[in-house]
Image (tube, rainbow, N blue to C red):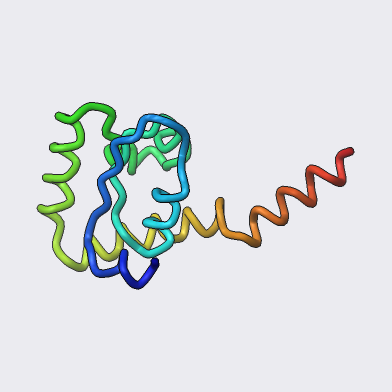
Length: 105
């Protein structure tokens, strides 16, 4: 899946549910992800809140911003998102969370 996703520059996700694995997988692949998921805004740093696009109009504006980025800037933004995904959602991080939870029982 990562190799397939890396062929693209941006992932648009219009699902309104929780922060799903498609979004995380896209981020871990270094893609710029624009999503309407409510959990994404809470998870992103303030300077990236524009990537949370709840309406179709907001999604179009965010997509326009991504398209206006230079290739280097787009790769940099994808790298920042990748780092966030790894720090918060990698398998290692999930094991740490389970270990902390089990230790609190």
